[in-house]
Image (tube, rainbow, N blue to C red):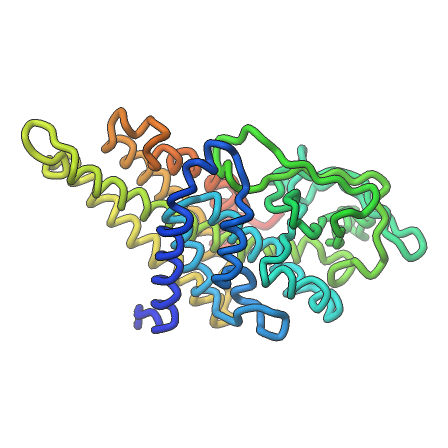
Length: 386
């Protein structure tokens, strides 16, 4: 088995790492404090080619493989979760559904601006009463002549209410299937459409410098051709989107865990107690060793899942495993890192405090840890699908 990254992937890692350290790190703490989405760093990430990474050059993308995309997210997350969330959500949830399920006309219309970073796009899935049970969506879309009339609301939607947000892909009930279950379809809604409102959410514990939105649809009318793919295939589109998106959440966990280890190792080598650096006390050295061990295992698990996807092999189970494990590894690493910093780890002047807060979303977003265990168990045949 060859675990060697290609020269192109190594160059990508180094360039993104350098960018994150030089451009994001100096401003991340202040942006988090002010709960500010940075259009300046957004533009710089776009210049670096961090949007549309896996999209073909035909539609303005970079034409890279999925592992390269994951490496980029990992390196951003090593410095800041908010910026990593912007990149991950835009590539996986914003661009992904249009690229994989959209018509040629839809791709040509939306993807070039999204891949260039000129515009952002949201993925309207979660609702106030439909989180893990996403198929229980209450947002409706009724066909009236040549228009869809959408009513409902969405919550916790990333990248949907910035000044450059161009629209959102919305999961809607468009009817009832023969078996009595709701027919779910995905529909494109552009920003500025009458009846559609996107409002930013504030006072978050984590990812404070990323954009999170509430969406409202009140007799919102969009053209019939805004249907994404085939009517009634929305659930399949959603699940396929989440399978790929879970890899990027895994990358955020992996990168965040690596960032925690980097900070903990540096601090413990500099901090002296009882006449020597605290890294030389076995109880602390073992924390660092455990962090390194789990990070290496997480990286192998995540990269293997990406290899499966890049080689057109089934990867749903492995994506759930990678998302679950990387998220929980970051939790343990953040906990160890704060403990090694002692009282300073509780202060906002130390970045480890932000990493400790940011980690929690990884256990919840794009399928909670509990849902990931259900997905894995179903693949094992422990019980039937619902």
